Length: 95
Image (cartoon, rainbow, N blue to C red; front, top):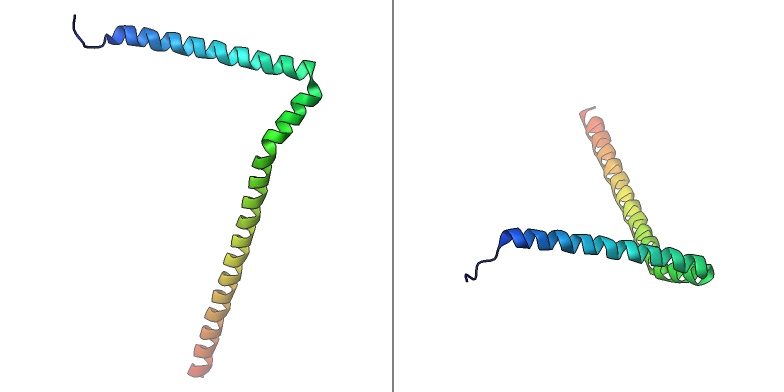
């Protein structure tokens, strides 16, 4: 026997693995639906507790982005005002 892998068998194994995985996902989804139906308050509590850190992270990142945008806008206004003042000074120098 050779030690080379048989790719045809590997492909069948992969297809079988994917099929089993789909069954597992389907079984998991069915379990979640059953859990939500049997204990809705427990289910919602668990979902909210699981999502809370994500909401907090989202709020923090949004706040940081807003601050960064404000700083960028202030810097752009300063640059624009500086350019206007330079242009104004050049005009008065020519006169």
